[in-house]
Image (cartoon, rainbow, N blue to C red; front, side, top):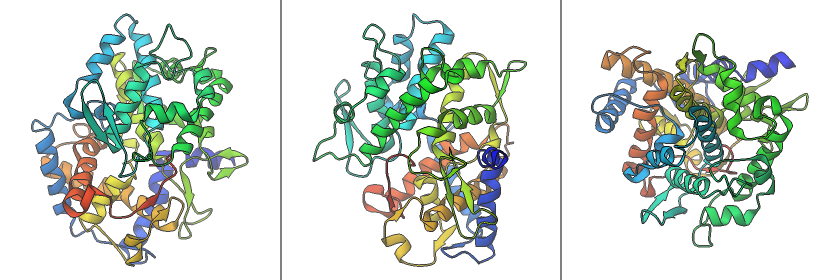
Amino acid sequence: MNDLITYLRSPVAIRSRCGQLFQNAVAGNSRYFDCDLAPLSHAADYVIDVIRSEYPNLQIPFHSRWRHMTAGGITRLEQLDSLLAELSPHEKAIAKFDLAIISVLLDAGAGSNWYYYEPVTNLGFKRSEGLAVASFQMFCQGAFSSDKTSKMRVDAQKLQDFILSDLVQGFQIRPDNPLVGVTGRLQLLQKLGKVLTALPEYFGENPRPGNLVNYLVGKVNNNQLEAATVFDAVLSSLSEIWSGRQSIAGVNLGDVWRHPDVADDGFVPFHKLSQWLTYSLLEPLQELGIEITGLDQLTGLPEYRNGGLCIDLELLRPKHSDILHTPHSVESPVIVEWRALTVMLLDEIAACVREKLSMSTEELPLVKILQGGTWTAGRKIAAEKRADGVPPIQILSDGTVF
């Protein structure tokens, strides 16, 4: 059982289990989707056009939470560095881990009707950018710290004491400004507080999520750290915060679901938020002078922008009309299969993009193609095809998966 748990937490398992459904779909045997690779070249061209529009010199940053914190062209990260200026580089990395972890965990789909108004800039933001800016401002105002003399931090005690009104106020939730999955987000923060306290080996004796920096620095060898090591630390330390998930021998598996066409136990792992978090933790580590290796061991992110891109560019075609017209739960086989096919198609798109640009995996890793890239392209084509830019498939979100 321990071996199976370890396996299901690995990027190898994500690609292997998703690959079963991909091969099935390519062979025409999928229950829900036709998978056609003929439009792959066109899809790569569409993504490249978006990349060149966003990053003409092809100097693409990582796909991470930090990109959303510059929404509206505001230099919030420079403001953050200014606020943290008196800290040592190591302490600054811990604070940035605090912010990244809390912001990513609160970034699980906002719904189409919510927005955040930022008083200091007089700007409004929706979806992921709105959630990022809201969590950034909450962090800077000390919303996650129990120490009034040290606002720029997240600590276990404050998270455990977090109440619904804190979230309602921070995210400006009102009857006319509803945020989906509010209760799920609150429970996630409270559980995070308990996990921080229970795992001092990861989060220290004065528990903060940012203390994971100390654990990871201990894994550095010859000034190098594998991306998969960061991913494993995220999964091992945070697995217990997720609600309503599959478990093995009492161990919570996180973003792992079942599909009837997957061999053996039927488990299909994704770990979308955990990989998104991993990508977001790499930059503070790089700022410490640590070289991150093995970036492409991790996978593309199976969420509705990347998945929507695959449908809107006709790499995937739903076999039944109700797939597009009926909302689906996260654990439904339709959504599990859509996400699995998205993981594999992102690898295919990335390979085609690199070939067309004559760039290597080292020059253009998947994490940059996602940023440049497929996520932005998914949003762009959704806006071209549907009112309000909604994804082609509707998901019943609990605020903890997407």
